[in-house]
Image 1: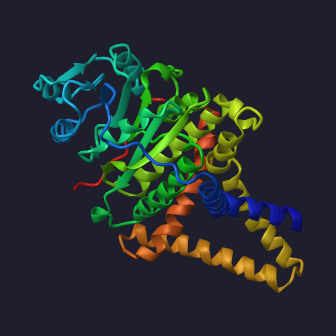
Image 2: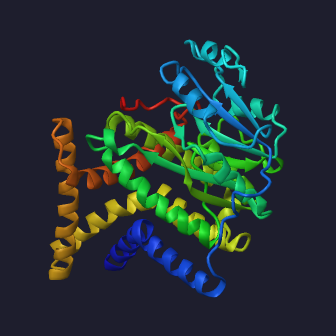
Length: 390
């Protein structure tokens, strides 16, 4: 029982903190041996680039998104813009069609984002393709900062950074911003060591020649597209200075809906990428993939529950003061999370409780996502989480 307890506790610790420590040490060793990885400059010949934006019923924000898109910096004659509005029943297609600089692709039927993207890819003849969401806003230099990395022939995909607008956060979704700051740090180190494990759909890019269509029922299309490029032996780079800003989820219920979908997609991705679980094929990539993604999306949430149960049993059987201390720490953490939930339902703001509450919600979402995927009740079509108003 004690061995199983310590093993469970170790995996939980490694998943959320230990991997970050190991990663930092490995990056420092690499720097000492080979120096820092330096990004190419922006004074080079840039590749041709197509920016693809999928928009479904976004009439409330699409004008602002178009304005943001048209203000992006990129060499004249090398940038094409495609907006896909398939299935939109509001004025989104009409608004986009008023801009002649933009190629509008629209069909009345809604077949899901990934099929719309596949359809758009048949129209793309550029060297690089960048994807971004309709409800995110890019910094002016984002495309230049992303495209420069393709001067390195070992790079197959580049992911930008997702940023949550903190000035409008007022409840437990503040934990979302904290989580993404930590994730950003891990991605920087992942990228410097070897490769990021998956790209964020808010802003990512690929070499057109390496793009492979994923299955129509794919839930996390951005993750699958980028990881199948990594499987071909190319690196996924993280470019934190190219960022997509978006508002946080309207409330924790909307954030939970989003996280459950991601968790269901995570299990689907693991089942469809079995080669990456074999360290003999891609040693470093498999190490990063299992440490950063697989553990979070599979056993770790269950081991959190098991560690608590075993800790209670060990203490009940007279396990000693040290086990009692660990149990007290566990109870304290979950009590803070519970208090965060109670106060959130009553619209009382205590920021110190946001992080434990969000952490528990995030891990509950994994369990719920696994259950939903097994039941076959998770659609590939995106059910948008409601966002806060600016």
